Length: 602
Ligand SMILES: Cc1cc2nc3c(=O)[nH]c(=O)nc-3n(C[C@H](O)[C@H](O)[C@H](O)COP(=O)(O)O)c2cc1C
Image (cartoon, rainbow, N blue to C red; front, side):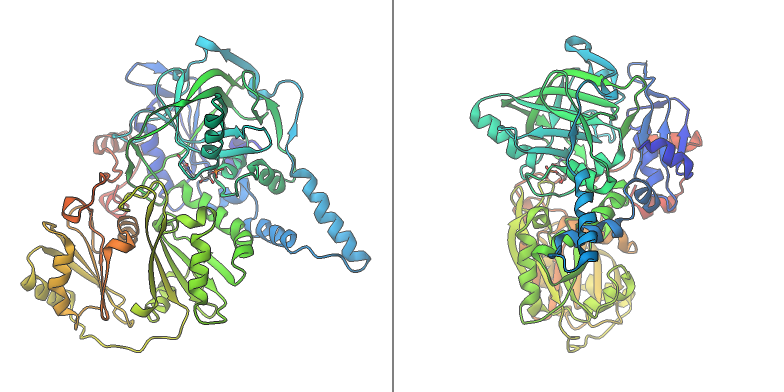
């Protein structure tokens, strides 16, 4: 598939010919664009490194998955793909001739699943640069954020194999360019390539790795798909496309890559060597801090004759990963149902940045059923990273009907039905007391509406004044969902102490407050529920930050520090560089106002 042709044909591509810096300028334009309701992909035809004055004749393509329409054009009808997967998972022995015919058709489809290895070279090897000629600085690699540790390849397809060569993997991991020949490989501790890495390390041999860029965008979507270890993501590619992925052997290692990609960076990893990677402004909207990761020593860079460089921008939602994540959510529902048959549907709201918040609708048949499903989620694959899971029964409104589902949940939320436990969390989670291990919150809202333990509702002004009489740390207040059985009161504080003391002081006002949420005074707006959900889901560790005092629930969503005995470093928010936004706006390259900047905490 030629992504540019398709995007152009359906008026989903903007072309910007102006010379633009690979340092901040290009990513900032893409960042602003993909937050627009009718966002488009952008082809930047004249990238330049303004620091060195180097001009690239390689266009940069960003926001390929810019909208639901783009997802449909690139991946296909995701509901249809999900139902094909579901049919296969429920295949039964055929009864009768017509049944046999239809089963034959389904199995015939599977012929396209297995990648084909071709002899000879692919288009991605029209130009071959080896040794000292293979320079990463020849690629227009972007630096997205001011505090980033350097330039990062953000849409790399990382191809690896197990030590014995029986398993193959495609993963989408960011890659930090250290210099002309070395790349940091940010495969996190739970990911498949990291498991392969340890096989090579144990055997004391170098690990071959190849990174492809561009080609059919479905490769990149497959790279981020959470398939179990040992299932090659290009099988999913073949299943969705109905055509086998066609692979060619790399020039300097034995890895196979798709023949039609734009670039291939080949090399080996010395498994005894790790190097500091990051910081990097990540899709949580926070920086991931420096940590040690393996390093790829580049042996060759091959490309098409006229390659295009693909990149994405991650940061605060909504971004391109919203659209990629939507396809993942839909296509993986039937697979998830194999471990949780009572699951009807699930939804990962974009401002919950996927693993931080999930809503699940289920058929409830017995007491504890929702709790059983919580444990199933937390025990399987990448679903185990989910921090906060809310379970709702079959009679609930549509999960995406935000207004009604919120009321439905709040009318059923009761302290007795809240489970707080511990488990693995995403390596990116910054709020857990320990790296990759932290609190989990499961709320069972599958029961009947709770009895109303009424509170006296006050206006925001009256309640703020009462609170300020107790504590002068509180600067602003807004109440939400006051017509439900669990109104939510959000306050901002100028934090000077552990918030458990503030909560202790405020519990005397529990006749006016059911759920209290505390956020920092700085960088929060109590009138912006979209970004409040983003902040709270990111900032809390359920086992530390949720206080249940009889029927009063308080949540401390402030940034943590030594006042909280928090011993890790708390990362900064990923913010745009104001001077870059101003300069782009002045040159007519973006068109945003104060409201837009505040709405998305730019
Ligand atoms: C835009 C984007 C960037 C990502 N960056 C990383 C990354 O740097 N490291 C990582 O381990 N996972 C990253 N992921 C998630 C992985 O791609 C995803 O977990 C995938 O399933 C990993 O494949 P694996 O299980 O085969 O290792 C990213 C996903 C997206 C959509």
